[in-house]
Amino acid sequence: MTEDNNAQQHLLSVATKLPPLWKHNIKLWFLQAETNFELSGITNDVTKYSNVLAAIDSEILSVVSDLLFDPPHADRYAALKKQTTSRVFDFGKTKD
Image 1: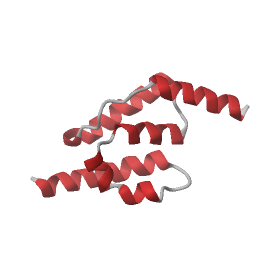
Image 2: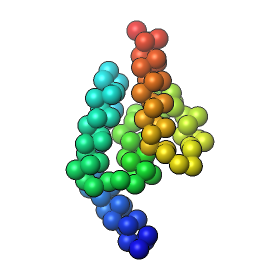
Image 3: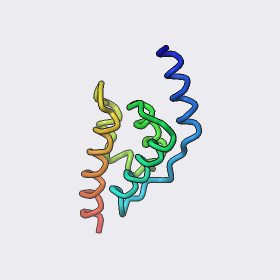
Image 4: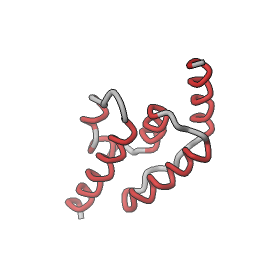
């Protein structure tokens, strides 16, 4: 049964493509991403995490690189969302 669920999640993730992350309104971007996940039936934490990583540009990836190289064992998506939201906001404040 687990293999069937993994295969289904993979097919759903292929069908879902998030827009590039919006640096100037990251909370709204995550709201849209979560709506896409819900509409696509994506509930798997790693699938959400991977979809978000695919939508983040290299500048933002560098801001959260420590989390990417050492991700938590559970709740990866929530950790990535939290850190990206707070760090990108702080990063944007220092760049302006």
